[in-house]
Length: 317
Image (cartoon, rainbow, N blue to C red):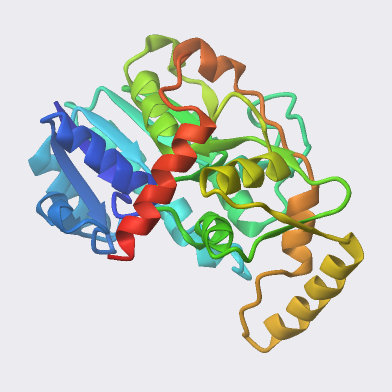
């Protein structure tokens, strides 16, 4: 089979390219950024998804059967929707592809859980409550997809907080702080959220892609059992034969305030008020529709954590 993966040099995209290429399928990754894995260069075309003419030419020649659209601007520091043009113009171009290339059978559009604020339980797929411009850009893109009248099958997916090999700084830093014995929990309540180990998410995407029940739906991606950050950090520490230190919450708040000040001068610091709020706010997503389609996740959280620790250690060699 032939798979087009936009943004295949990103975190989830890298794992998708690895999964489908390892199965012997033909894969095309279009991305502005070079792949993270050197062997993936053979599948990569350096393209900006906003370049209509170039993208149409390359993709028409490839003639994909399945499209997984991951390309996006994901930063949270944008000051206007113009900073998220990839999320809007990129979707327009992918919709154009799907209308003009007859070989395409189905497309998955990747959105984000941030179309809704933490704790908000949407009453419908278009009940948004985004608090970031990134989330708002993805909400607009979702509406574009639903109104597009595509001839091929489509589905929108909203990844939760995904972690594992090839992940970015935020969750990798969580693991690395524990590995370096620098991570600390604090007294009182810490958050319980929907997280997702990357290999479980790849399994979900694959099942969604080939199951007719997903057509026209909006589905969350992530592990089905919510994760408490204290429990998770203790699990990782146990794997490493370590113990997590616990400090009074007031000291953590003081450290976060210091981090806020340093951040204004572009100094990185492990804690700030945003991160503390993130560590104390629950966000449990409804994955019941996804579970109907992809019921048996291949990895437990502990198995995923062990796999991730091994990967981090391998990257140091």
